[in-house]
Image 1 (cartoon, rainbow, N blue to C red):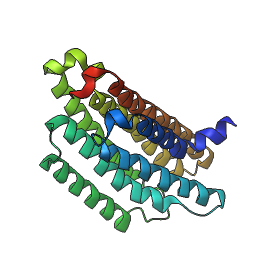
Image 2 (image 1 turned 135 degrees about the vertical axis):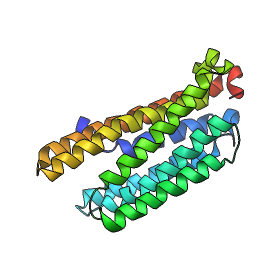
Image 3 (image 1 turned 60 degrees about the horizontal axis):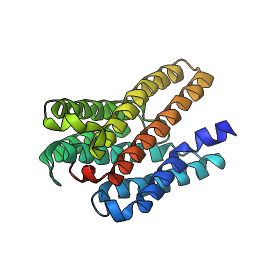
Image 4 (image 1 turned 120 degrees about the horizontal axis):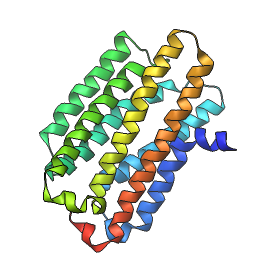
Amino acid sequence: MIDFLLWRSDAYMPLLTLLLYLCLWNRIGRKELVLFYYLILNVLLFTYSNYLGSKSINNLYIYHVFTAIDLCFATYIIAKASTKKSFSWQFVLISVLGVMFCIVDEIFWEPYYVFNSIASGVCYLIIMVYAMYYLLSLSKSDAILHFQDLPSFWYVSAFLVYCSISFLVAISYKYFVSHNLMTEAANITKVYMVAIIIKFAMICIGLLCYRRPYTQTQ
């Protein structure tokens, strides 16, 4: 039962987070629409991915697509938190370069039917660095005095923790596969699933910040 829940966490955790968003819709509304769409996309993609997996159909191409999508959404969320603007050239630059690398990786190194450990590892690293940049900027502002009340702090921290763990998983997975240690490779992916649970749990904390009157100012 535990393994079943662990392997399905990529679908049900964003679903639970989405339900929380809907429950708090009167307080959040359209303030976090990008996050709202991100949750929906996660639910749809990984419900389909789990279905393919249950039928023993190769679903790794979904991870190729999601790596690029995840980078774009994460970058937008961090850019919005950093610049306090709905549009930022930081987001455009980082997203375009990241997506281009994902395409190059799929063409020359990791085709769609294998796990894209190189592209995902690079994207995790990009998100980590950008998230740390935001947290450094936050630490130098007056907002640090009430950081725990800021939804944006929890969103960015969620991606930072998730990407930090997943980056190590991607490296380890690549090593195990290259040495034909398939059992170890399968086991290390469980750590990735735990990272997913942590990510959406932290996003939920960020959403719950809207229950406090002060958090309307991010």
